[in-house]
Length: 612
Image (cartoon, rainbow, N blue to C red):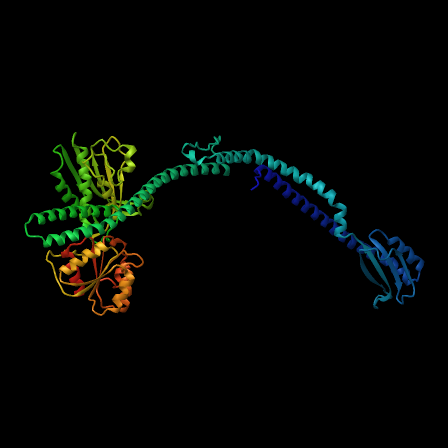
């Protein structure tokens, strides 16, 4: 785009406007000349009627055409270009001037003579006049140059004076503003000095207001850049955590399949081993280790925010008190805990996961204060955040339960602040920490719809602030969680088992057969659907969720369309992929988490077959 300076544009604009004004004035004055021409014509006719017409009347009445001709010749002038006088019978006429010299106006007069005082006048002749005038185009061509020149001197003179005053008062300052804004470097906007005209006096005009607005805009840009830097850091961290969470969730999903097969076969071996034998003891230790591995996977899934929806209300102060009572005994004797908790605050959450948050934070602070001792301060208050306050935290405006957890330790160095929530990152010595503590805390808080902030207090201890959405007790729906009984339930029905993992399907088949069921298996969901539609003796379908080509949900929906009475159990270690809408359509009767025990499997099968 071509650049044109404001000064040049103003000069060009002044020239165009002044030219138009001058031309308009000139045209107006020429139109006034034409109007003057019309007025002269009317005056000429009036003068003719008052002075010449009575003499012509007497001359025609006396039939003195010599006198008529003399009068006609005397009346011809540049305006009255032609005159013709005739008697009544048109037998005698006298004329003078040049006829047809256009443009002209025609005027006819009838000549009357009064014979007596009481009688009617007698028409004795006629007069015909042609009055010549100049058209507007003739006047325009004749006078436009002189009129434009004279008028232009006045108009352009005034315009030049106005421009000089405007240039001194406005353009110079506008040029300064343009140079200031043109030199703004967004990369260095934090160090940009304000635009100050340093005007003397207290009077300001629009340019001064523009300068003030630019200063205000620069100030807001500085604030916005600062806020965006903070949001960018949070976004980068959130993306990194999301990527790590996705990776961790995927690993946990695959490991769940492996662990399900391992624990399933070990339990089968444990059940068939001789009571209180060395083999049974060894298998029992494998099962205990497997439970620890299951717990670790649960932590990874919490970090990656892969879990069921929260529906229970939790009095957060009670959870904090219980957790602190539990960890108090394990803290060094020189570490004390001070609390200030509002017991009236409720959130929607999982009390066991929130319990884990307090335990992890407490253990980290206890490790930090182990040598020099100190105080752990825990506070719980209600805080209302506006949309502007909540945005940098990645939250929506509203009422929040604010949990602060601070200690008197040495704090966290700036160079590692962005890594403290990363999984497997730890500053502890080898063997003293897994690096999953704060990562799990971060995952649990995010899973609860909140956020956790590490306050910048280097050298003044470590202080975490946790925000959870606050809810009134009446708005929360409680769901009673039913625990599976430790007893094993058996049956003799025919169960169809579908899974794309050969090891898992073989393990589940042996479990079901050990419970007395007849079991058919299939590794391909498409082939399984065909067999299910053709068979008439299938009592229950047990299918994995994630399979290639067709998911367990799709298999269940297609089967229900043809055979709606067959109960279906869906199992997976990754049930968070399941949408609520997919459960509400009635295709699935029971859900089963991997890895599962024989007891859990037996109860899920009996509940599905019983229709609840």
